[in-house]
Image 1: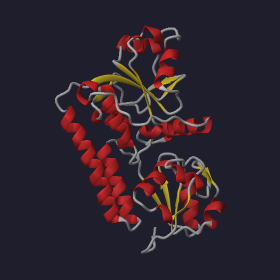
Image 2 (image 1 turned 135 degrees about the vertical axis):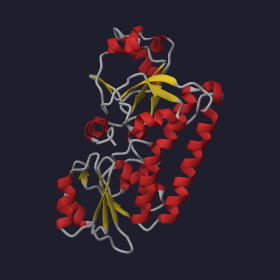
Image 3 (image 1 turned 60 degrees about the vertical axis):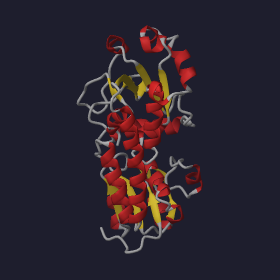
Image 4 (image 1 turned 180 degrees about the vertical axis):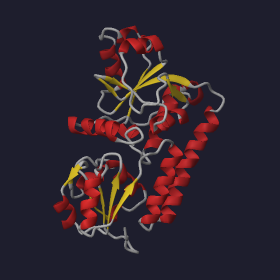
Length: 294
């Protein structure tokens, strides 16, 4: 792969890559992204090249990119190969990332490739400072035992070697499910046996209060102490994206799970998917990513 000395036109093929480009202050160089790139909101106004798993090669070529950013998580190898045969440089980030610090290293490498090494160093430095601040406040606190619900029908959670599991650790939590599989499936009855202190939902779910009301009506789920005590947390879909916004979610979780440390609950805004298509993309990340979905 030969990347131009000066990258002026970039196309991204995954939402986390688009977020990273914006976080680096390179929005003016982004000439195209995918149908699912919606964070920040301005990304929606960029020309779209289709679905991340099956983008339009014609649409990409028309944009004359100097560089296309892809990811091993949801983009197909065939797409990268086809673009390179057309003479378009493609950088495919290896999302086999198991820790948040690996993610920060990946952001720095991507920034350097795009000629934004200084911005990358500054961004990574700020994110690391926020993580270190959380770690300092939570270092003496016992980990909260949680169940992270990737999907509830069937019930799918996270394994120990995913970056989401590491994100939980930074937030002062750990999963009650011990599994080497990235996305283990289990029964609700097994969850009742494990009795997590908190349930964490993301993305396609309603606000925590609505989610809780629904769970209290469901057989078996209502037997969970976390449901009975109202310990249900809803976080942004950023939790499944290896992008700078993940640190926002880690901070939110820390505030939600350790109110005794942070006082009142965090006012960090919670978001949800706007449509079914976005929810399906989240499951695609979960089922196809090498590390966890990332």
